[in-house]
Image (tube, rainbow, N blue to C red; front, side, top):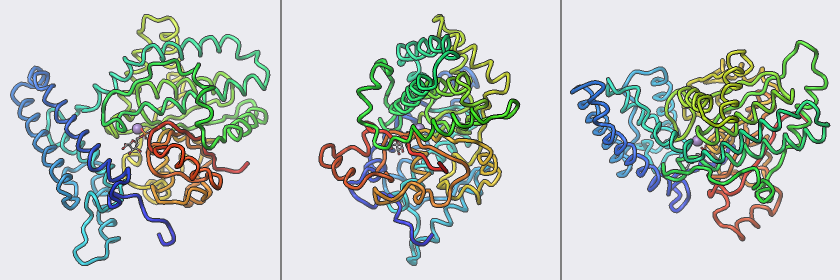
Length: 441
Ligand SMILES: O=P(O)(O)OC[C@H]1O[C@](O)(CO)[C@@H](O)[C@@H]1O
Ligand SMILES: [Mn+2]
């Protein structure tokens, strides 16, 4: 669309996008290949010779993909029929149409970073679904689970904290409730530090007690619209009729520790009566290494439920109950694993857009969601968030994200310049975070 800034892209040599395509993505592909190798005997035990052949096939497809990427070959259409194949290929054509030079073809280092990075994960999925009988293998499952196990101590601390809080939550004064709300929000924010794609798929678990760090981390919150979230939800609570609902939708990001922090937030929203219903959205296919699928979601709740730790298992039991009673609803939609920015949602996935419109508040977790909210463009730092959303306003919304990509809007004049001078990697280290709200106040 005319008038929008350029997309972040690997064309900008030395940029984070460039370095991601050059180094981080091939590293992730190599890890995926290695994971398949390591599961060879498991495939054999499960499927016999057919499993071994499938492993070979998937590896050869992935090696080809890595070669295409490293030699900056044109982006080729998807070939395997799947629910989203046509939409992906149409989007590829659209990208082609934007390059109006005569022989211009979308390529890894030329095209928008958001597009090629999403495409890479979609091609990994294609390699797997082209290799039955191992076509339901999640190449990232192992590292997601590892993140969960390595974060045990922090998870125990969070579950204990939540269960202690539950005991008194009904008696809290408004200002105390607000303090607790701000705490669980910040827990969910810093939970986003732990994704696995930023570390090239290496472990990135939470080993310290996040609750005791909140105060020290506060100065790293660059945009802090928590007050707006409180006004909105406490207002809903006050004005809500007996039988009516307040629905908060959470667009999930990473599994493992981050998912725990999101579920703690979701449980708090119900217990505090700030919300009566939570809808979670996850990914339909393995995505950006650590993103949550329905299998991860169910697996994690089961792990908690069967834990030996009293408060961990209490959380697991309660959360399973929320799901059974329909207070928590898990949904997925293929749109979340398409390359489109969210401003295209009403066109590309009108059903999802209509669904989100029913929420009182939508929380978008994580960096990738922020990139899709803002179109992953070279916006000026002081441009209002509302403007960068480019018409995407299904309901009041808030991005809860640590910065891991070179896009940030809605800052104060001079704020970005100051940060660049004091900490050159402020946009990509995951050290800084935002609560950025858009909606009527
Ligand atoms: O899990 P999150 O917070 O969406 O982060 C994923 C981020 O990590 C990266 O994959 C690093 O390349 C970014 O591209 C992406 O925005
Ligand atoms: Mn993620």
